[in-house]
Length: 181
Ligand SMILES: NC(=O)c1ccc[n+]([C@@H]2O[C@H](COP(=O)([O-])OP(=O)(O)OC[C@H]3O[C@@H](n4cnc5c(N)ncnc54)[C@H](OP(=O)(O)O)[C@@H]3O)[C@@H](O)[C@H]2O)c1
Image (cartoon, rainbow, N blue to C red; front, side, top):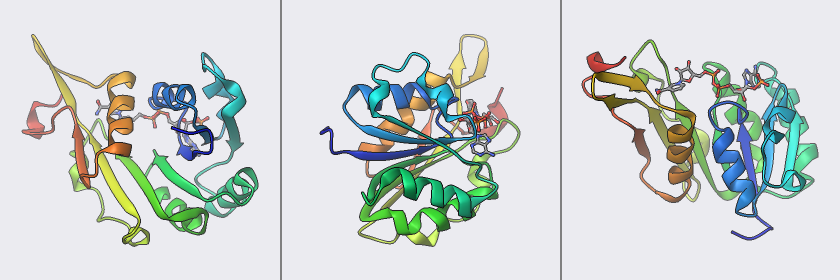
């Protein structure tokens, strides 16, 4: 990955923090959006390429403006999105003009309480040559049953989706959903 690489992560200070650190380690410039984006810096391999953007996904217009200021004209070629619904819809709209024509957008879907595959249909901002991939967070098996995924497992799934062109991906398993922890 070259240092020219421009990558956006929304909601990257929680379960996606390991992914953010790996991306920084690989040379990516990571524009990171959260209300307290500085939390991503803890343990980061190179904070120099971390561009913290303080914004709230409940105000997508201001979020878009803040990202626009941070990218200073460089189109975002890859995005990892963790945004609680229904706020993701406004985030998709506000990011649309900031993404490159061939951008790859990975959106994570997770819920401890309901089958995440019941989420809404794919957003329409991402017709080819853009690429949209949804990553469903499932659960993992243990000797005694199942457990939720770790941050590392979720981050690995998110990073894999940046390379894997399959439009729908699952981390862990979701079938049968009744097995969930
Ligand atoms: N399937 C599984 O195994 C599994 C495992 C873990 C989690 N999950 C799912 O993921 C969820 C984890 O919850 P979580 O959302 O707390 O995830 P998280 O990844 O731990 O943290 C949320 C991220 O979003 C940011 N954020 C939160 N509210 C925001 C806002 N209004 N505007 C901008 N950024 C915001 C947070 O930063 P700031 O607070 O600084 O804004 C943080 O970066 C669980 O409900 C569960 O369903 C599933």
